[in-house]
Length: 231
Image (cartoon, rainbow, N blue to C red; front, side, top):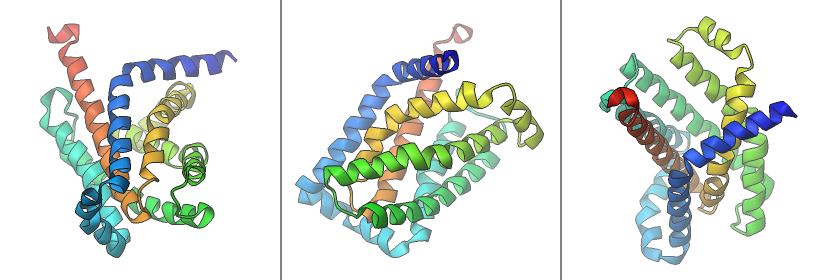
């Protein structure tokens, strides 16, 4: 019970710290989803993207996530000296390839969900897809694998150091609170992503992921600029 209380306490602190960017993210993606169906001009503007994603299949999914979730955040991280990490170019390439591979995985995952729940846009369909995404799929695969990947990169590409870091309750102290706090961000965002046609969902997922990553990196930069050491 005490363990659960600590996890929730850490997660709640993270949610409170990120409440403003969370609200901005929710408002942006929900407004975009609503506008897509109510404003034909927006649907027309996104039609080339939809066709490219539909015809390109796995290659388009890889390229979208390679750029949105890999290259753009990594280049931003490299450009801002205050938050630049060691081996930025290697990490940029690794993160981009990793994200691109996840684009292919999510393309497959969205196809599976389409077979399971259909491709409609009713409230019931959106709820089923979002719940399965966030409470079954995400804890089982994306969160553990992605956490280990970034832990490995942050450990100087040392598997031994990454394994050592995992000891002493790493999953309880870090991964579980992160999962709980991420639910607060991603449940509304993912529901909005599923409101788009399936051929646009990978693109929207990449766009939302990129925006969220850039916001978090910018917050990290500001926090460092405002720290006592920076004054």
